[in-house]
Amino acid sequence: MDLRLTGKVALVTGASAGLGRAIATMLAEEGCRLAILARRRHLLEELAATLPASAEPLIVVEDITAAGAAERTRDAVLGHFGRCDILVNNAGGSRPQTDLGPEAVWMESMELNFHAGRRMTHAFIPAMQAQRFGRIVNLTGQDEVHNINAASAPNGAVHIWAKALSRVLGRDGITVNCVPPGRLRSEQIDQRILPTEEARRAWAEKEVPVGYIGEAEDLAVLVAFLCSPRARYITGQVVHVDGGTRRFPH
Image (cartoon, rainbow, N blue to C red; front, side):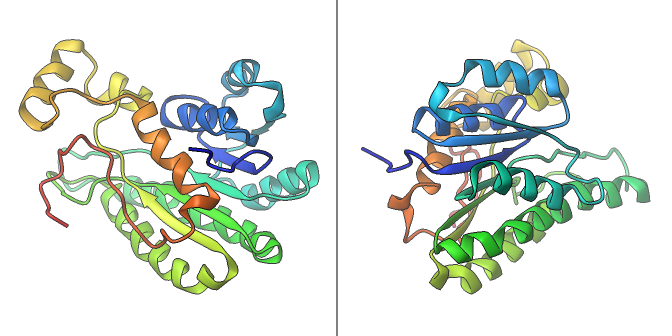
């Protein structure tokens, strides 16, 4: 299937590793021109070197929680490409707590996992409205809570905000969707949550109906489709990519 993404301009945040890198790579392979954002320049440069020349990668080194980051990013992308068709809000992180968690962690997690992506989105909406096309995809997290995690509340907030935004922007040709990853092979999972092959295998055998932990590309294919003009009638949705781990029926 031709996703009709050739020439579209996409910004992927948190693109230096893991899910963001896989999404950026797949969008480039589908013909997108790319702005890739993260804090670690050397990893962005390594990614840019692997992308096809047609991607024309623009490296944006930013901490999305910093004051003015959304506006600086908008100006860099629009100044370089003249437009932005796709925004993938991927930067974020889990914050599991062994007790109630300190106030600073809750505040930092809300800033990283909700406000930063919201500000980035709001910065690009006027340009998307002017061109009558836009795709916004937010990488969030599971809503089946097993313990206290400071990322759970902002992830839920993103789902509600994105649903409201989808209703406001639908007639402008802009879709807004959320994709909560399950346990997928990524920097965060491999280094912090399931750091050994034995741990990953044991968790998958117990929790994942398909019997294995997925790869980042298993999520990137969905994101690429949601970013395409072909996904015009899919908006305001939360689509889980978890190998069937989630137990909720809806």
